[in-house]
Structures are given as C-alpha cells and as structure tokens.
Length: 362
Image (cartoon, rainbow, N blue to C red; front, side):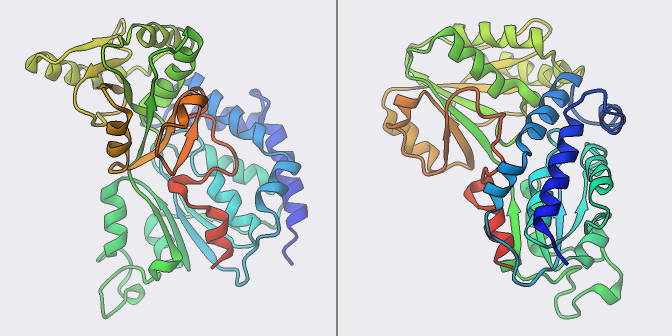
C-alpha cells in the first residue's frame, strides 16, 4: 500500500546524506558524470546537487505535494534531458509522491546522478516503484509520458516513432511505437530565459546576473540567453561581473572551442561583441535572438513595450529583472530577480505547467 508520509521521510533522509560532498554514492556518481560527454564542471555539479538537496526537507515536500495524488496509479515514463546536472529529479519525485510508478530514461550526457540518487533512496525505501530503461522500452512500457528535450525530439515523440519497438508493440493502424493519448503526455521543448535591465543596476546585481547567464555554460532552459537594456547603456558592468564569475566557476574545457566559431562569425560580419580572457564567455549586440549556449545576446530598447511585444512571441521560460521594474513587464510566466534563475524552487512549473497537477489528474 502506498505510504506517502513514509516515502517523504525516506526522500528527506537520502537528501540529507547527499548534502555531504564526501558521501560515497555521491562522489562516485559525480566522477562518472564528469567523465560523460557533457559540458559540466566540478563546481557546477556541486552547485546543482547542493541546491536541489537543500530543498528536500519533509516540510517542503509535504507542502509541495499537499493532498494531491493519482486516482488511478500507472506507469509514468520520463524522458530526461542531459543539459544540466541532476535534471529530472523534480519529475522523479513528483511521479512517486503522487503514487505512480516511475520508468525513466537518462541522457548519455548525464547518465549517473539521477540513477545513483534513486538507487541510494532504495536503502531508505526498499519498495519504491522506480526503474530505468532505454527509450524503446520506456515508450512501450509507459501509460503516460513526460518528455524534455530539443524541439526535434519533442516533434518526433508527437508523431510517434516507427520501427523503434518490436512489431507486436506497435499500433497497426498508425505504425507508431507507442500509443499514449496526448492528454496523458507532457512535452517540454526548447526554451530560454531573458533578463531586462532598467539601466540603474549596481555591481551586485550584475554579479547575480552573471550566474544566471553562465552557470551550466548556458545549456539550461533557465539560463539567461538574451538581455534587454536601455539604448545607450553599456554592458561594461556585466562583462566585469562575468569575468569575476569565471574566477569562481571556471568554464568547461570545451567552451572556448564552441564559442570560437561564433566569435569568428561575428568578426566576419562586423558585429559588435566582447569576450572573456580565454574565450570563457561571449557577448554580442544584435537582433533579439537566442544564440548558441554560452553566447549572450545584448539588445537595446527604446520603449519597454517593444520588449513586451517580443517576449510574447518567444519560448521564454522565465524573466529576471529588479522587483520594481517587473511591474512594467507584461509576462504571464515566471518573474524572478537576478540571481534566482539557476536556483529553481521545488514547486517551480516548467513551461508554466504544474507537474503534480498533471500527474494527479491521470
């Protein structure tokens, strides 16, 4: 019988153990993670693990889930992204704490952290219904689906996948490798964060904003990829803060190589740009378009109405701005102050959708 209270105690106990950087299951998982083909650094992994574990107290978990639970428990398949460390932890907890069975698939870019935490949780709650599988088995074994990935991956899942699973698992009418109704699917595609300045920011605000931009090398949906500033406002303060941030969170070894092509293109077209020593970050002026990860676009505005009009047409995950200035932003999504973008709350709603509500409604 499902005992949520017991499970919450187990999650809190496991999280408490994982706050110790020398805890063996954590150190082994971190080592495997840093050896995987990703853009993670030791400092960024430690930040992500510590931040997420600090949220998992009994009180916080109880408040997050409340009395919500599944009326008809089922197997929920979760396709996890691999863009930032420990991505997918919230989905895992939401599935289990609403009473469902979890069937996850992890990216080769981050194959160790989430499975290691789940395996360690089994010491505190041996009977949890959680397993990991490759994508074909996940699609054929799930009754509902949560998937996070590129727009191409999400489009592929929308259309179904031919010849992925054995013939007897395919829908003979459509040829799809899975037959999960759209109402039982939660898809999350590409998105990014935006910062808006009023031109009166102080040094400490720029320091927090540098974290929003550079942590995880720009790969997360919560990474600030575009910053709007009043026309004529120079980015010097932010550039200085970004250089300082790199002194604490060094760039991944492959970041400079990734940004070199971007810099060469900017130079070829004569676009205004600046970069850190060793090409640890890149900032360019131009049209309000998200660039490749780690390349920040600086855009000037004359009227805040232009910003509001643009934001309404983009896949913006969240916006950061000073509290008083937020009142001028017409954005129905998540509004945060600088320094909060990379510190998601336990109950944050990707794409504005409450995951727990989705799961309890299955």
